[in-house]
Image: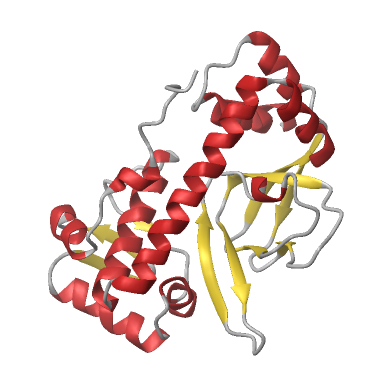
Length: 246
């Protein structure tokens, strides 16, 4: 079982670069364990030091977030199956944000020191890790634009577009729609709106005939109108970055 799920992680690294057998052997030599976590569990807390592992999402969803001094939360990233959770902390001594399970979550925990040594010794794997962290930075820039410059209608539409694209890339069949396992409060924390405003915008998208929404199940009825409403272009996701850097 462990080897089967670890193969998924190796395949994710290989989607960005072409791994030779020595690279694959080096990845499989990493010390790792698997872990199942319930919703809302913390994987990393801001201010934590001596992080021992970097994690990879096998199933479920997680999110990064920051808290203000008075406890208000800003979600800054949603992580889906096939994503690494904390490569950003690979060479940093202290965590600067929180990582929390959004749903029931299965992860691979990879020994941090082993992964550091691997990145420093194998250029192809280092390139893959660089690409992953640069794509994360690209997504964060788009989230800043979304919160800072789009109206509420556009923010919700944009996030739905991104979620659909990334879940499809992770292997979800979107023909019958998809489950959006996020509360309106959490959605508001991701786009900088109150839960009341989120509810209003979701109802507006439904009334416009753009989506169908029932008990967190989303079906996109008009992709072009949803994309237009969210000013969405998938360029920032770099989904076409498949082994070009090899």
